[in-house]
Length: 589
Image (tube, rainbow, N blue to C red; front, side, top):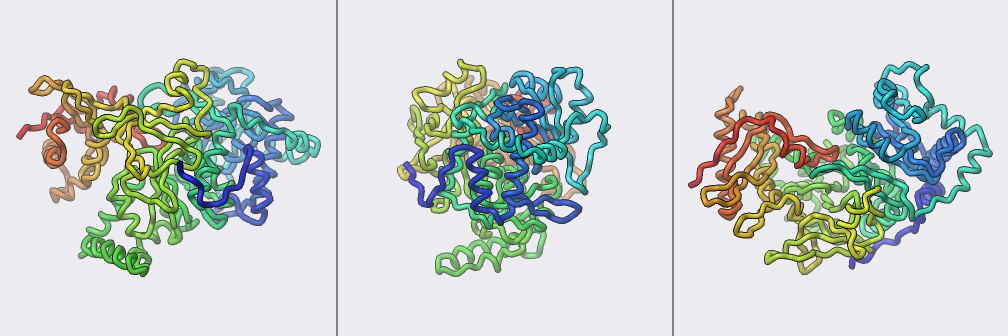
């Protein structure tokens, strides 16, 4: 089992975390909020005071202590205050994906038995428009945008309660504040109820305790050093436990500074303004950035050659203790703000080539593995291990093993540790399927080497099994497709029987049309030309794979795949998606 190599500060619950940080980091900035083009700092004591004031108002005015409260909206300071105000007051927070449609939002509010919902202005407007479809006694609280932000036009008469108004009410009553501060949350009961995005089917409600999440934070703190001087630009949605635990609560524990991206179009601009030291992202986003870097280099005279030469030379320099990376790749680093020291990624597979290249650019990538059911991180690279083709080793306090490995060592990953969920909400059958003898059966397939490094092969539900009993992992085939610059996205599924009467491999492909135009040196391309290019790519991929894994047919998509908010392809949704032209058959050679 991995042991911590940094000292770790114990925390019992979220309130303990918040109060400790407000005292230890009393002079430091917890959040940098952009107002009228300038970043304004909010200190840790100010953040604590806002959480306590908002929580006091929620409990005093609405009796929400120990109640379920839904939370939906864009990433914001108000979102973070709301999350902790509810949970520090012994309530249960129910974060909801802001991209869900109204029917799904209403369903989660109903199923979770939420007594109130805290929403940003856009979602407040939606909720008010359809209020007759919600419970009559549902309390709707609005999070206002900061000055200078784009605002929704809301009729003030329709707004029941506002975030700002409740903060003021909470601060005005010493008695209410005192009562709230005396609340001691039970760290072992459900405190966070998360409805998974369901990449393979219907979503489930994951019940997490404050002990689960605090255990994950302290385990990670033992092997990855986050400093009070670190700054993180929040890009991924906070309702997802990956961003919430690592990019919000872990930063609060460590005394770091958090800012919020204004949107995907503004990431580079926001990075150059805020100059983050940490970047928490997902593989798809990182791979797209990598493609842009390579493309930009190739468009310069000798640029690609210089990039290749630079990576080789920087490696030689590092071997002799000379850091040439800043000089060679300063322009790349400048796009990230110039102060980035670490990239953390997870939630899906990533190309080792991308990881190696960023490492050469002087930007180490820490790959991790986790699940919502594990709060979420359980296996990861750390300050002593950064492997381009492995998700790393179990965190301190985590046990991990491979169940029923096959001849190649591939089996289901099982996890045991204090961060494993309490179970699925009101679903004992589903809980019993995955929680067995204290172990969580993840449904993910992987291997572990002699050094304890884990590698992910794919999802057990996705495996294509041939009639001869051979396993084909779609993720492996997708990797070979996706590293080709002419392919934007792909998804591999079981096709019809091939000439031998066996199961075949079929690929759904969303091509990179701009890259194809560049390759063919054409302003426009026809479907036939696109199909021919894709067919050539598949022929090259098939040469790298055993014959039984060869792609025998493919579909070309005209739009991106349906994805979760962490940019994972929803296999279940896309298998049912028939919005594609007819199948193209790959020739056998």
